[in-house]
Image (cartoon, rainbow over all chains, first blue to last red; front, side, top):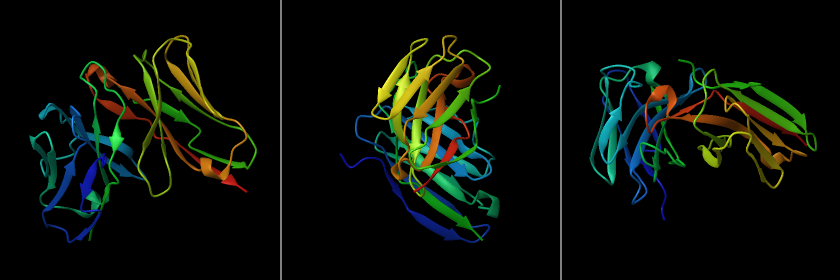
Length: 116
Length: 113
């Protein structure tokens, strides 16, 4: 299996620009998670989906952030407009677990975002 | 509510020394997971503990779940340079929300050869 695939691996953009991060989960996994990692705040859960449905987006920092999962094999995290404080590594992870049992998470390689 | 608390934040050891990281929760955990993240890498699942008082071993790594299911520990015997990285504990179903996984801040381990 190819594992969780994220793109782009690196993105450098200017403040105010729209950023779209993409994720392809492992086939057959029911749950998908978006995390943000910074030195100061650690690994923060932004949003997670189960069977393509958003379950909890309380970790999304602001209205500038949105996430979609139009089908079982694709998810996007969008930031519009981007700000320098959004600079971080964004991880997507998928899991074969359920809402009652989260299960092991498989992480992608991450997307390193730098907003100038 | 508070996420799980991990101590220490950093640990520097000489190769061959032992290492322990602790994870504490103010509430009872249904279960707990441990992950390792190498520098520049992504978190990788190590283990899940479910039962009160559970002890599991993976080669030089020993994982424990407290009797009250409010704390857990990871102990590495005779560290090697390959053990370098950040070790995270993670709480599923944090705050009563089903299906989530909330990570502690992690313990960063460096090993001097």
